[in-house]
Amino acid sequence: MQFLGKLKIKSHKKITKFLNEEHVGRIATIDKNGFPQIIPMNFVFTNNSIYMHSHVIGEKLTNMKHNTKVGFEVDRELEYLPSYFEDEYDASFADTLYISVVIKGNSHIIDTKNEKAFALNSLMSKYQPEGRYQTIKQNMRILDAVKIIKIDPIVITGKYKIGQHLSIPERYKLAQKILNKNSSTVATTLKIMGFETIDNKIKMINDPIW
Image (cartoon, rainbow, N blue to C red; front, side, top):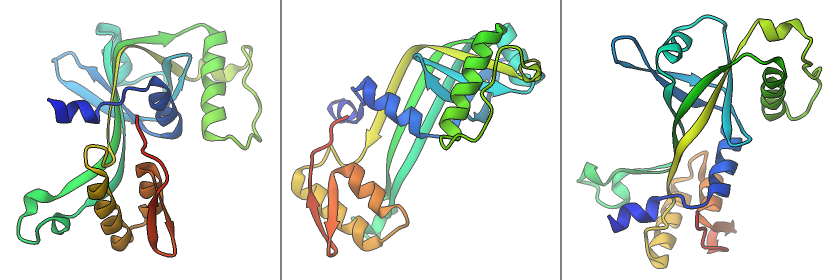
């Protein structure tokens, strides 16, 4: 239980930042037979709500009409840790550094044009920060061609595993192994872990707490 507590993201600010950085989330609805349906979606987290745009017809929309309770999940794999980091003969040591957020809440299909325009403009601002698009206004016909899904969270939980459960010497050892492995994500992973690299040597610059 103590170990799991160390993996919990306690900062709502960190959760918000993570959600604003990620591009794909997964919404889970319940179909008429009681089975969950999970679909990857683009999304924006603003005003403490999740907004997504959708085609006007779809199974998830039908599901929401019968059951407004939904789940929403976003995750990022930071680094796969091969088993040989610990033992070349025991595959059970394989692990992953990651960040994830899970939301349970109530869904709404937004009908008001002002909120639909707000949601679409928020999505455009997130996915196209360089601009070069026309701001969507309440009188535009495009609003009739899409559905806007809103999730009002009831519970937001986050977990992260970046080595914070290890002692400082153990974290240094892990960071060095990740550096030596030299994956495509090594620089980002080490930064999130609180390290920087200079001349292929690592140095802890902060002890990140989420």
